[in-house]
Length: 447
Ligand code: FAD
Ligand code: NAP
Figure 1 (cartoon, helix red, strand yellow):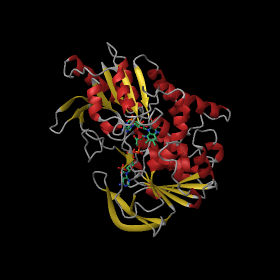
Figure 2: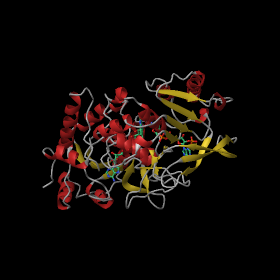
Figure 3: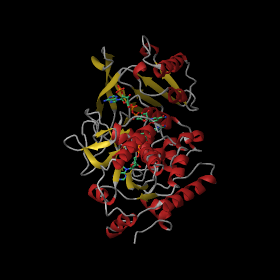
Figure 4: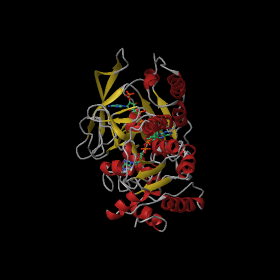
């Protein structure tokens, strides 16, 4: 059996592992729009968290198994279409993640200086689609980060790191220069609910307190009466109370964690000049309910970190409300709510943009178990055209150049080699040209 796994993030790799390990093993073509694998492990996880990024070692071992092929620089919707995959493979697993940001739908959201966290994260991690962005960090004195999840904390922390903290990471050189040259004095994280409802986790929160170049400030009044909901929120509250009791040490930057506030407008004529916040109270269901109390906070930049969002693929069912592919435990459902034979999904596009890397293992394994169950029960149509060469022939016909796994390892070696000299894990290649050139000698132009 041959299966196409679309997307090479954690969900794609965990699905591939389950397929390659099946009895009898299944052949996997992993189709990825970038010349590089690993999804958000390379391009989302913060560069100052190298230990987390090292999960890629496990993905490398999966990629080395017989029956696995990486087809990089191949985009479904551009180079290959859903109908091609259905024809050329016994089954397809979509694990394309959540490729855009959730919007807040407030006035001023599109003013210059108002950015999605997704953009900053992709930029500092070297995503080739985001390298032209100029956040104008040098003109920022105060930055507002909206949201209280781990991505919001990543953004707050990355903007507060000192040159000594950023230097040994694989943050792009351009981002290191811009962050170190920024005029930022204060970063304000704004949470719409209370400290007990925050989505971030305690180790990430505690890390803020260890930064060399920033003091963390919390208003004790915003912690008063907070009731922990679970162990995480109990531990968060402990850390937050510690911050509230601290005397600032006069470090160059200040991080303010503020609760019970929602932005109702992003203010400014030509560019961001401030945010208008409303104070919220919680109702009996812990939902934020605005009071009439408003305040304006001057700032030059806003990063909206209120969640990622999945993007529809042509010809593949999509639920606009949740931004996911409608599915039953990974079996993709057609318009009548019935499973589409041979079409599956895993990861963030299956369950929405939440959960850590490991969450995708259970999720992808569940999907593959159903796929194998369907195959064993004869529910997958016979695919006489599903040969290993057929997809490469089609891509060649369409003039697409594929970065095969050897192409990626050439990129990887070039990056690691450049990093080694500087005591960094890697120096990322981050333009399409650089990536394709590094892969060229070793990549396959299907013939
Ligand atoms: P992704 O990792 O997004 O992978 C999807 C892949 O599909 C991408 O490579 C993409 O290029 C590809 N793709 C998309 N569309 C197409 C197409 N049309 N054709 C071909 N390929 C396509 N978890 C932790 O455990 N620790 C952390 O420190 C951590 N940090 C995070 C930081 C950020 C900023 C974010 C956003 C998430 C973080 N997470 C972290 C969560 C973790 O990254 C996710 O749980 C995980 O990456 C989701 O996996 P996925 O495979 O569903 O999606
Ligand atoms: P998240 O955890 O869902 O947090 C989103 C935050 O945005 C929540 O605080 C939410 O508040 C807030 N929000 C949503 N809509 C809003 C609105 N309209 N106005 C104001 N605030 C709004 O999402 P995320 O931070 O993007 O992270 C995604 C996943 O990746 C999470 O599972 C996260 O744990 C994981 N991740 C892990 C790490 C790590 O382990 N180090 C790092 C980064 C990401 P409400 O609660 O009120 O809705």
